[in-house]
Image 1: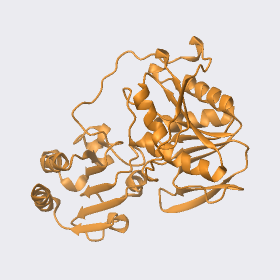
Image 2: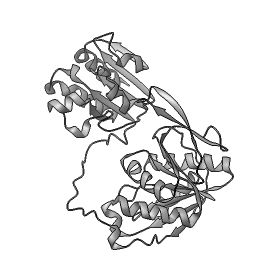
Image 3: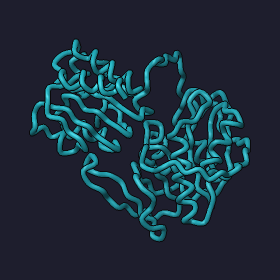
Length: 320
């Protein structure tokens, strides 16, 4: 038995998320007395694949098939199932991002496996297999037992530290046996955002809410984000008003993020918003209302006018 991790790459490069996933899998493998096999789909150089070994993978299965460029969930699911069956995987782990949350349920059905999404820590016990996850938009924790022979998990980003093991992983080409009929998605055009820090990758995120008063007041937030090399985000009312693009909306109905540092300027702290940012390591809230719900979840709070506080923060960052 082994542990299989599906490790995404972006233009042939792995990001922290993939290394964190392998580190997490390696820690579980140690408890189970087994090894980690990483599955990579796409054109990735051997030097890049070897990095997965450095974080605990003993074997890397690579699928270099241009058809997967469409990111077809059906085809990717079939490839993961084929790899899990070939490796006799007892645990299959995905990132708890859009792709992982789309593929994991398909894989669990095909493998007759129990599924727990949004796992935030190592298993509490191995026999029985019990994992921890956040529930009620991060306000509580639940311990979930999986009784099936095969377990499928999606792991929340930024929930486990990177641990380098120095493994020298073996790289093997893998044929998942997919056919043209397995691909139903056709990509007509790809437009990528350039020159911005992607919210899902950002270590620091600067966000503004309705308390910013208008779209004209976003210049300060943009300058602060640039100074910190941070991602720029907003609450749902802001995107609904058209002050900022919907791609910047974070929350339960937007992007789910887990940065190391999250700044919330003029955001009241509705439960829907907190549901998308509660996994942040540190939350700093700035709001002129001392009774704003955001302060209950914040690690640090500043009661004040955002338009007065932001310039002071920018000045402080520049001094540092």
